[in-house]
Image 1: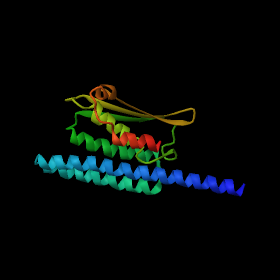
Image 2 (image 1 turned 90 degrees about the horizontal axis):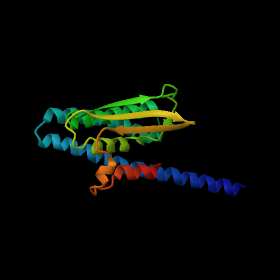
Image 3 (image 1 turned 135 degrees about the vertical axis):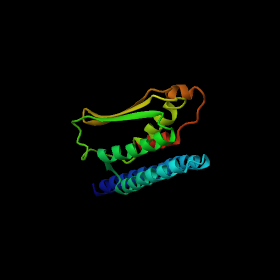
Image 4 (image 1 turned 90 degrees about the vertical axis):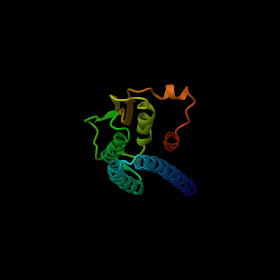
Length: 183
């Protein structure tokens, strides 16, 4: 039985390391997208927007780094990071969309734990694909609730949606792919 326990611990450690590696892959992808946005503001000579975006980006990176060190975050912290991220995207898209994050009141926001930035890539898809082509009145809804003791996250947008995008041979999302492997 000692050998079985040892092998089990090794397998758990390997899974933990694999999840960490996938998280590390996702962070550069996310950072690249944000830096691209800052570069676009600079190229358009919109230095005020670039400075504001950079300050908000720095807050998000700081909280993301803290979360990566911990390995898990509270629902409150995840929502905080989502708010920072969505505020950045609203700046980038000139407030073409609004968003609403709702949380089931029966969820304990400070004790419900989840992997850091697990929701963000799916929200990013809602922004990049769902809001694509909209000039105004875009809406992204994010809902956290419990179903049979399982934390559920629902992300909806009022845009085109992924099916329309895929029919045009759009490239597969790297962030979504990495997150699915993390899950």
